[in-house]
Image (cartoon, rainbow, N blue to C red; front, side, top):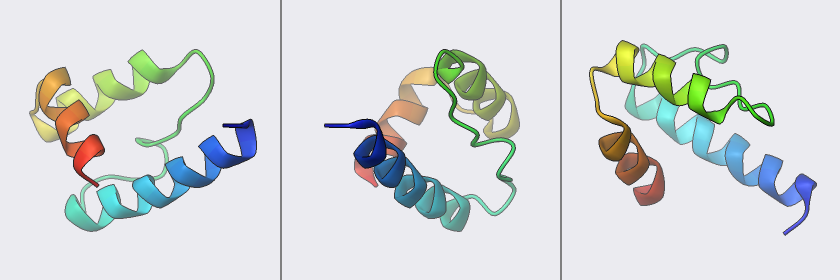
Length: 61
């Protein structure tokens, strides 16, 4: 899978997360190389979910 495919898939998942959790913003879901843990940390705080719960939510999209 190339970078364009990953970015496209993430953009689709990001849209679904924003539909499911209206409180999320583009800044909360900014996925940059090397910043995945930072993004997950922001989501944990904002949504009150654990890392494992967030991974399950994203996988289920």
